[in-house]
Image 1 (cartoon, rainbow, N blue to C red):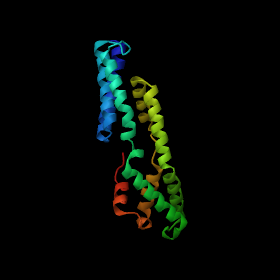
Image 2: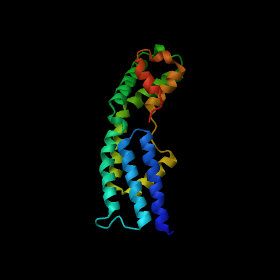
Image 3: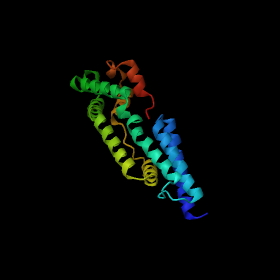
Image 4: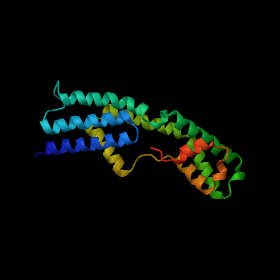
Length: 196
């Protein structure tokens, strides 16, 4: 076994793991794309063919993975989920009402959480769109190997941006559920469940 086989085999396993993870998070385009990258990298590891050869089966599979990966950025990500947008808009409204009329807040900590929640929720859509744009740039300009290595590095460091809007809501809701009496029950349940 040579170094090339080990390298591309490792990339294949990582891509497969990310594909399975995306499948569990219902990011189906990302899952299929990851699995296709895994197949192509496995093919390179086993056969020794080059991805840069014309009419290479691995090259065709990588192109299919890219073709599925880019639409997946727009269909699998939360900025384009109507339910999540509605929930974050409702949270923004709730935080704005709490900041404007803080009688429902019992402590200065709750008031600070409400202000932090308002700022985080108001900017949530823009930060999500910026993250999708950055992911699209990586998808277009990085190849499958570099993309897999970048995702491995990001996930190992835990550099995924936290949802400050949701975090502020959860913390304030635990401290004072009555502060969110105007928030719809279904929206609150959706926000309190585990979000991907």
